[in-house]
Length: 278
Image (cartoon, rainbow, N blue to C red; front, top):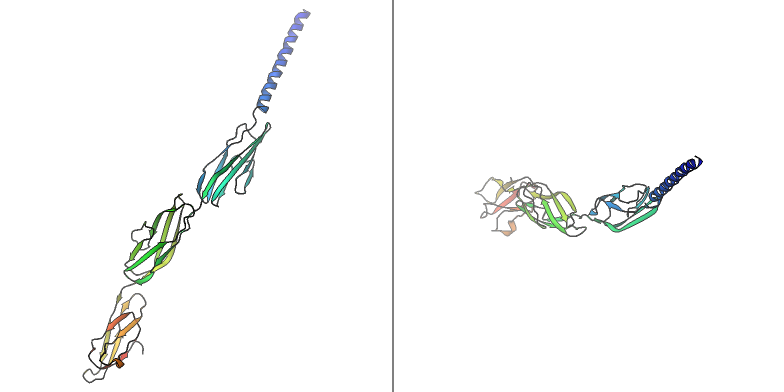
């Protein structure tokens, strides 16, 4: 009877030791065999400034601590999914260090993020004023930023068709003040635009006319009064030619307009009074 009890007790003790040994093996496997292996992914690897990038921890071994260097001077501690906005064009190296109770690991991805510069848009126009129809030459002065400029879209502000030429010419057929915009895209897909307000101001059409009156046309010298009746939506200057070439000393020419008005009294020796200036 005593021997049987001893054997039974031995079995229980052996079973308990085996259980403890198995638990220790499992504990060691869990704690010591699963050291972390650092890795990460990014939502986007390249793009135009400003570029927002979301990072995701892809480490194995169930790390419990994280330390990120996002390459733009930003250090992030204990965040599995940090984000960064890159405003300066260039390439960025990203580092991640992870740690758990079993150990630590780190990874560096050199030049992992690439940021491209947007274009700087500018243009010139010539001429910007004049009578309609006004033919205006536009010249692109844009800087591509990164790469080269691939596309141009011009809006001339008068409701006409846009242009996709780099240096287009446009005809304005109505007087007014026009805003002109230019939209460009570079070879990396970065885009930018500019609008210049009231850059083109063509003058409206001009209708030149005048009236005259006199007192004694049959008894020279005759005094004739001329009155300018020219119409235009824009301010004008004037130039009169009174046509009395018979006596050059009597010719009066006032620089008051760009429009030359001819008199029908070219053969008469007359005296002239300009009622616009007196």
